[in-house]
Length: 366
Picture: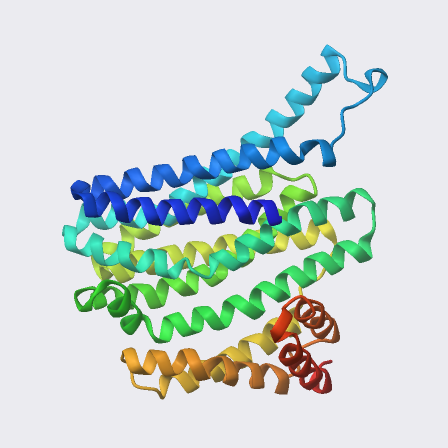
């Protein structure tokens, strides 16, 4: 996972740097596209270099007597292709469920409305960074536990994945929903605050979609790659129908509402199927405690001025309100404290402060 992070870092650094350079050189929007492409190219090159330098330490060459014959290799290729096709279709459907609203809004409304929506959309997706990281890690973990037939280990991986993602993503979504206007003003300018309503709705849908992503990775890891594909394709169709119905009535807020409802539906379906297949129950009480603490934090944020200074105050004080609330409602567990201690031990000069924080949390942890 560290090497994956390195390739992503290379991608982002080159993408942002080269996009800025080409735009300033006078290439305008085309320069941003070229910079993005160069970021992907740099990421691919870094991945190849890492792979070639480290592959032998992880996968030493197989002795001749254990090498696969032609028939076995063809069988392996067939297995890989049969697994990858549903995953590819899932990725394409994921892109579609994000972007259908843009096309429908562009069809029914003016171009400026598309601009407001496309400004809100990437901000709403910020919480997905966390869920994507967890989803990437839980896939091989769930696969290992399922292959070993270790139900306790599988349950631990699944429950903790849902808990950790909800613990981090839900308050972030609440914060973005409450301060959608100041966020858009800070990032894109005052003209874009017309997309605030769409952002507040859309980020709720992204909170649903984070749980879908975790369940999707679990399903793929335990050998059911077609399940998220079927659910996402169905969700894309539902999203299209809802967009066509709601955008003419509600404008860009209708597009955001359509995507949010579609995300809710696919989340419910895949959570139901995943729990049915794995036999693992959802951490319902953990969800309730986290939602309660997030609601308290949201109530505090509503009391702040809805402007950029209020946003900065929320960034400083809202995490403290959320942290205290999650402790009081019993949303922190002993294993969370152990994880914080392990992370703190690697943080050098900050390790002492993190250890003291862990000691405080340990008094309230369940």
